[in-house]
Amino acid sequence: MKRIVINMLFVVLTVSCFAQKKYYVKPDGIPGINGISWAWASNDLQAVVDKASSGDIVYVAVGTYSGGFVMKEGVTVLGGYTANASNPTERYNLLETDDPAKQSILDGGGTQRVLTQYAPFSVPTTWEGFVIQNGNPSVTFQTGSVIYSKEGVNKIVGVLYKYNAESGEGMMIGSEEIRKQWGSYEQELTELPIAATAEDAKNDLSGLSNSEKIVSTLDTHSIDFSQEDYPSNGNYAAYWCDTITTGGYSDWHLPSAGELQEVYDANILSIMKSVGKDVFNGYWTSSQVGNTLAWAYYFGKGHFHPALKYVQHTVAAVHPFVFSGSPDGIYVAGGGVFLGLNGILENCIVKNNTSTYRGGGVYVGGGGQLINCIVEGNEAPEGKEIYYEWPVGIDPVLTGNNAVRVYPNPVKAGEKISVDWNSTGTVNYQLLDVSGSVVKRGTLQAEENELTAPAQKGIYILLLQSENKNYKSKIIIQ
Image: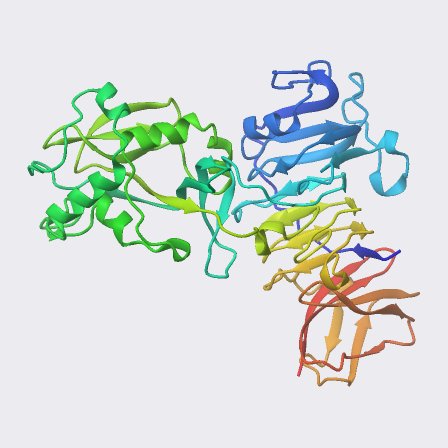
């Protein structure tokens, strides 16, 4: 059985504990509550993660939790706890036990990826102490599905808020957003209907038609009150939506008030937040009240509010989605775990997961981290249990008594790489290519500190481990 052990040194960035909250989850917890203690623990892990805020910690008791889970930026999730109310921090060490009764198990049931980070994080975010198993990201599009670029890159372009499985047609709200004026303050738009009341706005589903009429009438002649001397240009909401080509899709439009009500009614706010959308601000709609006011939508409370057209609100476009063929590529990368920038998986066992693309166990996007994880028994093309998307974060060189020197670097293919390692005894090493495949592994003795560089040119990751030290370095083979 193939086993890959990832040991990396990671400098923990301390998150301020000001107003930090602690949440508790156990399999036999109470449905529908926040989980404020082990005695009042919740049984819904994802609901608690969604409820938590950046800096909060979620403690998870031993047991099995089924379903696909989504990481939330800044929320630390820790497994392996005994749920002992008299000793709340009592916990098993996952990497020292094979007993399922002492493990917190996240199980994908063979039908979905187990743990997903949809968008890059600006705050390091850790899930630690879990067995992650039986993931298989076979994709069926539905309301809430995340849509990736059709240009062959991994960029998220939107979230489906409507989808008909029979026709394969739906609508998505774009992940890209900006703050702009509505435009045309005190300028009459005779072609654009008036939505005089909130009920009129709610019934307006003509976002595409509205946007076309706004852009056709104003073109680049809307007064921009955000700049000095109030120039006339195309810096307004509908024009921005009309000109973007996010993810290779053109013909985006500013949604009407009724269309944003559909987004809210789809109950996808947690997914929208997970892809980086700020749903707490007002969003412009293409529905106007009159010459000076247009309708803004507030997802926090699910209601409309008239706003002056020269005020800057958030702008997000919508676009039709048509599915053809079978979802592949990045949709099914990472059978067990999908990580991106600042997503961290630590002290976990990832096993028995399957993927048809990039990483049977784990897909590590640029800036993601695996720390002290065991990845074994996962299936993927070319046997790659872990796939590293370049660039991979490289830890700084250790100094002082922990100093390590790896030289020459760059090194010519097939030549010797010297390792000065301030340690006695043996040192285990692994050399990985950028796809995550182990191309060389072995041990170095204190008196034998050389290994042979691969014959194939490229960029590699060298991992070194002894009893008390870990080291990671980028190696360039010329």
